Image 1 (tube, rainbow, N blue to C red):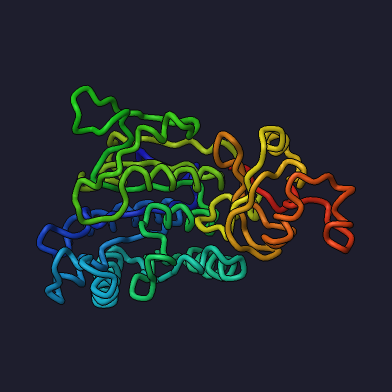
Image 2 (image 1 turned 180 degrees about the vertical axis):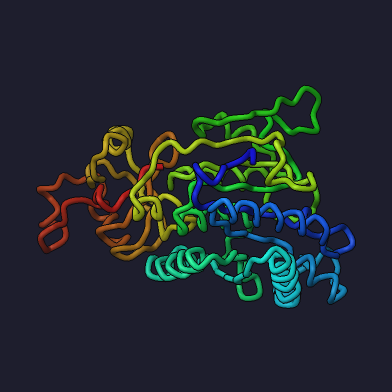
Length: 367
């Protein structure tokens, strides 16, 4: 097993893209899926707990309903295709896993299920129990109810958030490409990047926004975003080609994004969030203080965007870009009144005893 052997990775999340699971005519590539099931069974026998994030519901449903553009001509078409295709997708997974003596379980989640703390903890508890019971959870976004404003939009980032919730040590994104290249791999001289120790601006600049198949929604930009989320939670992430017959047991070329550190669970959840109610902009001095582990004080804040309440998740951005995410101690209007003001001025401005910071370091995660 070339990627994430069971001894080093007790829990593994495997994401499978639409182009691998569904053929161009909209049918299931069953023989290939049976090979994946055998791979999972071998890993389960070796003691590894595996969950699958499976795309394909919209593509399968579109064929059954005769919808144009793969079911993506409109939001309503995508929702109808997802509702129809999810039954077929779950049935195929149940069949191929049962043939290997494994029990499939289905979890459909929305963005809010993983962005709202209480719902996230509930989802994490369910996922953990399913894995403990020896099932193979098959997870997908609930596209039949999600809208453009409240959805992950791709299963790459969903897989990373699921890894965080499951406490997984590894994530494999099986795709139609074998990893990250220094430019679009269709261009002459493109160089494959086998290992990424840290995701920086240079790595992000290599991302290509295209999806080779035209069937899925996750290009390289979404995969790097997923790697950032997984790494923040202490999980390594690999982008690997799924074109081999047994991709999880084949020594195929891939790109490995190494986890920099293991963050406490709550801070990993904060760092991995995809939505924020607003943004607090800070000056260079405050940006430096934040990187040294300090709380965000009003004196270093320069501008507020969005409408948020106390306790909402906000992004913190400095002159060079995003720095952190955290829970605001004030609402947007109060924060705006405190911008650039020293702590000894706050009581007079607010009319009550101020809190210690705009965002306290205990409720903040650096990016």
